[in-house]
Length: 260
Image (tube, rainbow, N blue to C red):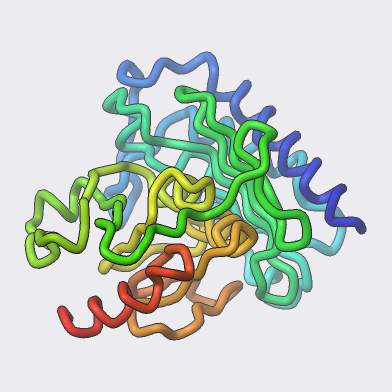
């Protein structure tokens, strides 16, 4: 199967999921709490999940979604679709326009293609390792700030509220709060921010699409200690995550190691 076909399928999935979500009004939508974790979920999440599962996986392809029961059969699949039907459900519920639909494709555990759509801001970030990245159809790439320039970093609002970013409040970084993890990664891939990282655990569905996009746009994605993240794992979770352009990635990793 060609990569062009994969990217077209991602685009089809993003558009269909956006249509599934359209009847729901951000900021005025009912929600429930998931058992165990207590994370919020809405009927919009579930509607988008059903649509994506109908469109994306073909025979022999695996599936991993925040809103689906995990099927361990994916572990034996060469190709696995990893999606978050609405990444940033809290922002969706609160009416903050920092949520997105996230679709990523793994081949042999490597993120090779992805798409992120924010229906509120009308930002579509789409691409693959072979074909590069576009923002609303126009080619784009990660930003490469000059030496001495402040690094624009997108950070979790909840992490900021908990004080986890206070130690980074200096002249190196201009920290901007932003919601969805996938959306933050998409903005880095599109060159609209220099970097993003999180120092709390995140799931594969949060980051697979964004990882493919950041790397396709010329950037670097790693764990905070510089290690390469592995994908399609039995427990699909990471302890932390860092994404940036190449000119700032080493500085970020060195700084994070020193601050831990």
